[in-house]
Length: 204
Length: 204
Image (cartoon, rainbow over all chains, first blue to last red):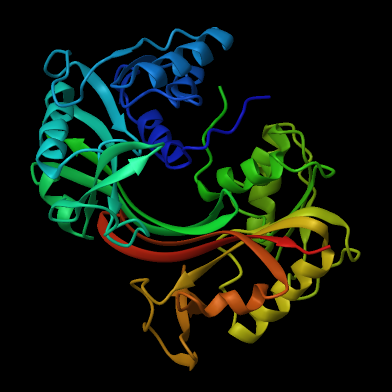
């Protein structure tokens, strides 16, 4: 029996991808960690590629792939400068990842994802929103951009207003957009997180 | 290769259930339709039970179960008066269903779901919110309760404020709550829907 992946919104993206008729080739930007969602796409017959900035997270994902006997193809990389050809990927996603940068770098990264995506290809990307409990915490380095500690390492977090990220997708078709505020128990504390998810299509 | 079910939030509920150590017995209230999510629980080894108010939707679900060779046990029933014993189900859910009633009947239904749930059992239920594009449409029959046409049949729809449904779960532990506003394309039109999902635990 297969596990359920914790990145639940990617089940929706996978459903959208399964309903298209393109080559089953997918790229994950920020693909590392101990539960890499490329494994789910691999289960559904996709050829997978991933890039990951952190050596440690890349290592965890590759250990996981080895255990499951899956070739996930996760390599070191920077989504601000993707080492893939124009129009080469049917599907691209970045889950809980792209917002760990300044908004200027988010723009660069999304432009890169759009560049490598094939015409008619689908892109999933999500953002933190200003409704998140951490928005406003730490030194401010721009408009709703803060330097915050993640596991004792300072990391930029960018938070977006409800309509703000629409501008990234003006040349694309927005198929699905979901603004979510969730409350859950994390390390014994109730926390309130805000995300906005997009599924968009590259125009022909 | 298994299909991806369209009721994406139930993947999260299934993940929560898989992480518990109770008997794998689940009840769906409003279990009918052409893509019954009990089938997903069946794939994961659960004994499934479902009740459905509409003969037509019940029939569709049973046709689906037969094709997949799954015994889903979906019978005719009314969630305001469940024909199951107290404390008999480890897991109960009602997806996109309970809000097709007045708020008085929603309360009755949720009390019934809580009654049949075992101590420490988990319940998923979701509601329409006042952010939904249809809130305010049609004859008003109560506080954010409207009679609206679904497939040419008049059906009550109840819409809830962000905190309003918390009162149903005051004797339970809220493990997860998600307030979602989504925009998608439905029959060629962009629509904006509002839902709030709860995963709650019955106290011992």
